[in-house]
Image: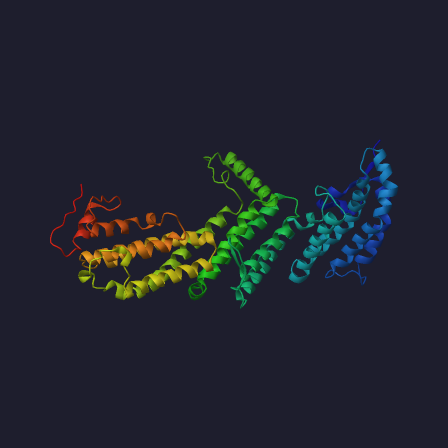
Amino acid sequence: KNDYIDINEQSQTSLLMEHFTHISIPITKLIVPFRKRFFFHFTGKKQTNRPDKPEWFLSRILSWIRDYREFMMDWLGPVYKENDKRLADSQHEFIIGLLQSVVIKLDTDLSHFQLEDVVFSHIVDETLAFEHELRKVYNYPNDYPSVTEVLTQAHIFFKWINMERKYAYIKMDDILQNKDQWKVLVVDSHYCMTACADSFLTLLNTMSDRYNILRQPRHKLQFLKLQTDLLEEFKQKIIGDENQSYEYLTEILCTLHYISYILYNWGTNMHFLSLLNYKCELEIEVRTRSESERTDVLETAETVFDDSIRSYNLSIDNLLNIQCEDIMTEVKRSAKQYKRDKWHIMSSITDESKYSITDSGWIMYETFTKNLNTLNKSIPISLFNKCWPILASKLSTFIFNDILLANMFNKGGAQHLLCDVRYKLLPIFSKYTAKPSIYIDRLLEACRVLCFEPNFKPVTLTQNEVSEILLRRIEHGNSFEIE
């Protein structure tokens, strides 16, 4: 016995109605008066037929679903159960029957108002909200016919995604023009969240919530492409303004890092993992058709945001280098007198416990320490752990080239420089690592060579470098030999 009949109406000719045309006989008869009331109020010249007020007819549908929910479950539910169906199937079929009218109305209005951006976008917004409520409040199954199929028709979808792009770019510009965009809202050991990062990620997250409700992955991927385009554009905008980049360098670093951090977390949720899987399947299909050589680019991808994360991390590394260069510029400025110290006439150090750094040396190392501490407090620990080794390398290279190789030393001067490095420079980095010497090993070796340290064999220095260092001693001849 066949409990189902086709619904034969003129609207059935639309491809949209294919998924809505098979419902049970009781539901078919039950929805007839609802359909008449719907088209009476929401078509023609009735005052209730307002295309700019889609919430009117959508809320009417929701009220019918709510008001007849108990009736469907209590009276038709048992009949469904006797026919090996679930109690809820009666309500779900009732919803499908009501959605037939909604689909026809939406298709008509969206097609007619494609050139009216405000009306069009409002209809889309209300349609998505309607679909969300069906699923959340009435447990309407995800694999049942959906009104979003109206939105994914080629001509409607093209308009919709372009509208999303247009408004997203406008919103992004508003975010970047906010006077408080660089205000730090949250400081954590793992990240620092700025106002513009929070607002921009909210924009992306809202977009995800909107398109996540779509049924076909191919439509979701087009929205994902829009999101990755926005990510790249946002990054270019905040690092493209040189004046702003210099003034708010730390805040920009925190912003890029926080977005990268959140993208990685997003990429591990089910929504984006399913899109990654679909992308991989598409890639395999394309390779099969084109018979091209197989690569593992997508197969080794961790998230759909891998390219964006790589792009952000590359910019972060570039900005970190700029930050380090800025610090070194200030340090070098403070080292002018230190470079001119009279290294060639300093008194020998007989007891290192009585050693004291020169005033000029103290200024340079304190300037470096102050900048390093400020940086440590201003950026996440993961970024700082990238920075301080760079600064250690840059400072040791500066001392090596601009002080050690640029001056002449007597025994006392060589001892003073070695003590400066051992007792002033190494302790700076000992707060961040148990073995600070490995980050300035060339400088340490150079200082030990300069001191004619007996039985010392350098490891990182070349023989030419050792010879050049030895020429910095004013004594005639030396007792140091390289084997």
